[in-house]
Every structure is written in C-alpha cells, then in structure tokens.
Amino acid sequence: MLRISNKQLGRGLFSLWASACLIVTPGATYAQTTPTWAATAAQPASSPRPTASASNAAASTLTTPSLPAIPTPSFPTIPITPPSPTPTLTLPPTVVPTQRPPPHPQIDLQATLRSLQQTLNERYSSPNTSEHPQHEPGQLIVSWPITLSGPPIAQIQASGGTILSVHSLRNLGISMAVVQYSSPGQAEAALPALQNLAPEILADRLARAYPMQASPDRGHDRSQQQARHYALAMLNWKSLTKTQLSQPISIGIIDTAIAAPQALAALSYKSVNLLPYGMRPASTEHGTGIAAAIAAQPSEQFHGAARNAHLRVASIMREITPKLSASHTALIAQALDWLMSEKVQIINLSLGSAHDKVLEQVIRLTLDQGIVLVAAAGNAGPQSPPVYPAAYPGVIAVTAVDTAKQLYSKANRGAYIAIAAPGVDVWLPVAQGKYMSGTSFATPFVAAAVAHLLASQPQQAWNDSSIRQALCQTAQQLPRESQREASGCGLLQP
Image (cartoon, rainbow, N blue to C red):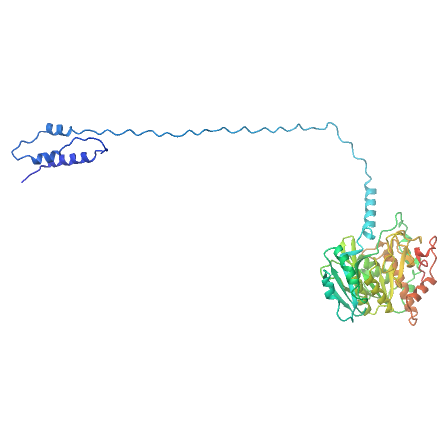
C-alpha cells in the first residue's frame, strides 16, 4: 500500500497551486513538469528518496511566459477657438448747461383761481348744445297709441336695436319704447323706417334734457345786503300775507329729488323717483331750490312765493359728472303721466332740451288735460336755438333778470318767451343758504303767480292763453328790452 507523508502531500498541493496561478497566454511555450508528489509516488518502494536539492532543481525548470505589449491609444486633437472680445460701448459725453433757465413770471394766484372758477361755472353749470350732447348717444324713442292693435315691437327689433324699456302711460294714452343701437350712425340709419311704420307711430332721437342753472353775469355785485332778498321785493311779495294762497293749489315739479332743509320741514309734498335701476341720482340742490322758491316757510328773511301749495316732485335727473346732471324725453313723459295721476294743476319745468317729436306729443297731451306748464327759456345765450319744452305752443316760457332788472345776458332769446322774473343771484335756503342763477330759478316765481291766479278765481275756466294774458296785463315793461323776443311782455308783477 502506497503511503504519502504529510510533507510530500504539502509539497504536492503547493506545486498544484503554483501551476494554477500561471497566466496562460495563447502561443506561449511552457516546460512540461510533473508534480513532485506524483513522481515520487510512481517510484518503487526500493528506490531511494529524492533529495531536497533535486526537488528544487525540478521546480526551477518552469519558464515565465512573456506578455504581449498593449498599444497606447491615440486621441484626436480638438482645436479650441478663443472667444471674440466684447465690444466696448462708448457713450457721448453729457452736456451740462452752463446757464440757468429764465425765472418763471410772477402769477397772481387769486386772480387765476377766480378765472378758473368762473370758467368751470360757465362750462358745467350752463349746458348748451355746443358743449353737451343734444341727444342720448345711439338711442331712439318710439311712441304709439295705447289702443293700437299690434304694437311695433317686432319692427323695432328688426331694425337692429335693443329695446331698453317699454312703458304704457295710461294718463297720456300712449305707450313708448327706448331703443339702443350700437352707434349713433346705426340709430340714424334705422330712424326713417321707424318713422314710416304708420302715421300714429312717432319715432325720433331721444333728446337729452339739462337743468337750466348757470352762473351770474360777469361783474355782478352781490355785496349789498339789500340785494340778498331782492326777488320777493321786486315781485311785491315781501309780505307774508301776499304769498299765502287763498286755497291750496297742487303744483308739480319735474327735476331732481329735493332735500328737506328747515325751511321745507313743514312742507306738504309727495315725491317719486323715476330713474331706472342703476342710474346715480343727481344732487338734490337744483330741485330743492325750485321747491323752496315756491313753498318754503319763513326763514332768514326769505319765504316761498306760494307757501301753502301742495307739491308733487318727480325725480328724473341723473348724475353725469359731479357738476353736470341730465335726463331725457322718456323720463319727462313718465313724470307728466304720474303728475296727471296726482291731479296737479300746474307743472314747473326748470329744464330744457332739443326738439323731440315724442316730447312735443306728450307736452300737447298734457296741455289738453288743462294743466298749466311753466318752463325755463334757457341759458345758452342770445344766438342759441330755442329750448324745449319752453318753445312749444301753449307752454309759458320764462326768462331771467337781475337786481337792476337787466335781462340775464346768458338767457336765450326768441318769440316763444312769455315773461321775465328774478333769476340772477337769487338767495335760496338750500343747505345753509345759497345764491343761485339761471332761468331755472325765475320759473318757479311764475309758477307761483299762476297758483295765485287759480286760487283767487277757482271758478274761472283757465287755459294757457287766458293765464298768459292775465300775467301780461300787470307785467312791467323792462328798460331797453322792449323787444318781445328778449323778455316777452315784461317783468312779472303779480
């Protein structure tokens, strides 16, 4: 049995490990060797053991293989272009003036402010056709008898307009519609077709109406204390007994809403707001001044000219700017219809507009009911066209004079003017008291005079012609204003 010593086994395993660790390279030549342990094992038992030097000689016959050379990789050369230099921006040199600008001229600040105030007063308080629209932009008004079978609604819509409102005015006996077009040009193009629908159907551009309030004449002097309440003295109404109506008369006012200062606290009045939803109401100053001129109770040496009148106030004025208010024909028609239902006998119209066929129609229908209409003649100046409704037949048109009985320089002229009354710098108990000017404020004095006529002779069958004749019988001829187109039959003297 073959016996292998531990030393032989160890040497054999080492030789086997050494052979396994050699790197075999293709094409390399290696010396064939036999493991020491294997050679030893093959020897017969009688053979002598190999010496250590013989084993070392056998191991030294192994040859180390030569490794092939690895070529060094070559990389392409990438050229690098240097960036272009940034251009330099050269600014022109700043030129500094060596001389100072000339000094500003001296300004009289107080005089400048006074001139500016005067300009604003004339521009915004005295509307005229050259500065403010005569009609509501792009809007038409159409009216037809309330009994008409088949109202022209479909024809109006076919004209390309949008109907903003339709009202049936039963006291006037008509229906009316306000129609909005995309532009004034489209409204003008649609108007002829609507005017030719039928003889009983009226159509026109919707006239815009303004309050007839303005500034006093340039150079007017209000410094004298006696001028503060000149209006009542000029009309011989300084006495309280003369301004007390012998019986109550119902007077309608178409204007702004009215406030209730102390002078109007005990006033008997009823009011209605006819402005469409969303319209901003105008300041109450104008309407309050009109109501105070007619019916204010005694306050600060002032009292109304028809103190126990019953007032009915239709509010139709909307705010356009803080200094400008306006209304239009459709609202005036609604106001007239409401005042008819209130059984008023007189209507004060301190407003004016351009001509409008529907406005003319509703004025005529109101006069046919026996109601007296008193209207402001206008403040646009002597060369301006007539103002309506004052210029319509049957309406009593009122112009204004100042403390010296001189005709108001801004007043309109025309054959339609019936009579004059104080209307320049009239002090009225508005808020804390205020001077107000314009044919607007002459009008309520004439309305009050008409109320005295109706109250004093209730059985008389009054109409616009007989009332005008009665007022002119006592009127005072104005100096240097004998022309009827300027002041009508003269200054009111009730």
